[in-house]
Length: 447
Ligand code: GLN
Image (cartoon, rainbow, N blue to C red; front, side):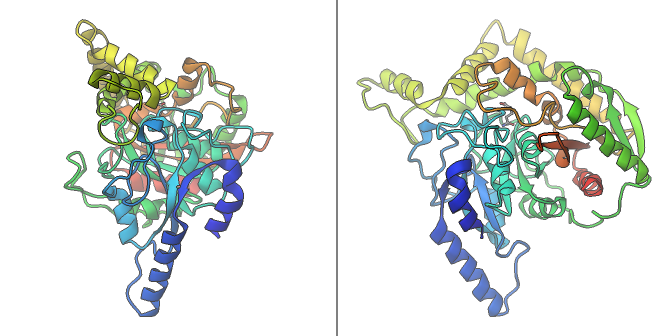
């Protein structure tokens, strides 16, 4: 059914960049036969899943949405994907995204924009726009995406699906093509909270191949998911309901909060006072790390090499000039600048200090509340092209998501209503470090 949906929908939506029809059918058959022979079925036996093209899968291309990785075939599989396969999942193929996961609209892919299945003139969000759109269009039962500053939660919100940001360290980053290593996280998209909990439980856990992965045991995230919110304290931060918030988003989120109150939650007004520094802090740290991570794409290894280069220096320069898109170049320039001698203290070091303050805001709040409720994004999905020439407007699409990214805490975006045009609206639920179970429980009550 998913392969059929890909055949009919993908030419319009452009979510999948490569589809492994034969491999998927063969894996499905293997699982069927194993089940018929009476062997134990994995938690995701036969579940068709798509993978954002920043994660490696042996034998499949990995472009990261960039021309510079054209033709590259990674010789290994990302740990998160490996765990899906071990649980019996069927890997359908690789999914379009913003180049190196930089963007909020999926318009930065070298392989064309992804379209929102709810309105094909609109963006699906980004950078994991293809992963959200694929689930929304029935092309996959679940997908993996990555979230560095909002790239799972914001597209989930725009496409009307569930998207999870796990705590930093909860899911291995091994096999993830790095954007900003201290912020990058791998997480699932699904049609329901329960499905998302099941997929996260499968991909989470310690990995000796990722030094930042946590040793904490992984709980069963589906356990207690239906317990409801009675007696829970849910914080609502005033800073997330100010200027720039679309009135329809505000009213959908507020009526959902009222629903949770009626279900027995205590709604607690809170303040996260450093919120207004989050976007500039994020764009200093993320670009600094990106400029360093992307230094490896030099035309020597991996995909694209400028054919016209005559000297070594020319090969570096022309391969990077021709291989990277405009947004990636902008970030390499910004990141190199904030790390340069003379500016390091003023920008990068300062940003690290503010990151601490933003984290402390959350840690203080979680002494008083179990979870925090906010809009996921300030608006529903915008039109393709609407913000494409205005990086500042595009960066502001992340205003409610970059805070949790900087703090390393977990969160989810869950559908909570529609605009008058029928565009989905998402509620963001944030939890403390490793409080995924709490977040799932609140999300389940919203669903
Ligand atoms: N939109 C943000 C950015 O462009 C977040 C991207 C992400 O989370 N990968 O950096």
